[in-house]
Length: 125
Image (tube, rainbow, N blue to C red; front, top):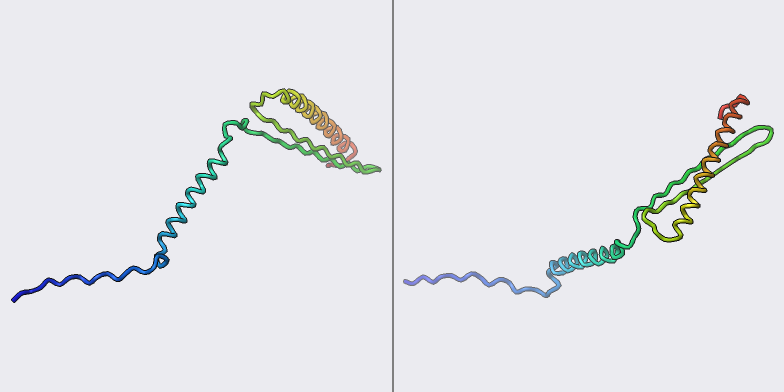
């Protein structure tokens, strides 16, 4: 007798396209990568035109002296320097920076003198 080879059953028919979540997941990942690349390109398009690093320092000195009257002296100096600037305004900024440093040194000397006066009066700061 003849034996017939049995055929495998046919796979079930595919449902509608929205039953399979993988195309949506892959499309979302591709959109994230493209968005990241566009954001990086926009954020770094002027990178060569920017000056060097900016260094900012803030110095704050506060002195309170109590005698027959109360004197409160507060000095705040903020200095900002930008390296590799060649504009004409940078000369003016350099002069302002030197003036601010000179004022800072003068104020520090005054603070030291006030501290000495306090110590001489017998009151420690």
